[in-house]
Length: 155
Image (cartoon, rainbow, N blue to C red; front, top):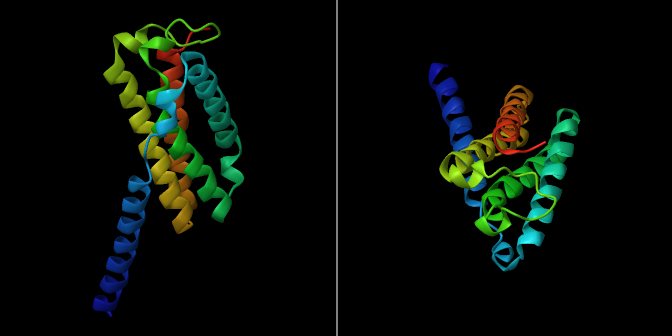
């Protein structure tokens, strides 16, 4: 009986590991960002942040494929965000990004990395149907967004 429980537990762990690896491999920066003008980068990052905010507001109600799709969007956006914050976007009109971003690029990028890990955890939890882990991942992402906005966003 113990051997059967151990086998089931190991199988579950293996599936979770495969899911985590699959999620990690999907995180590739969109190469089109490199061809964007500074104004396009700012507009695109602002739209993506609004999209993320909308997802996080409604994500608790999502399940199954909808929850996975929400996590996929967050993964895509958090992967791309650092590429939108190039030095040439510092002075774009309408940007709320503070100069502290470019003075502390490593700390700034680390916030996005933490949010990306939260989004990946959200995806794994959604795929597994683990509502508790899904909720924890959402809180992690929300806290990370708040941390970034308090430190690096004007207004």
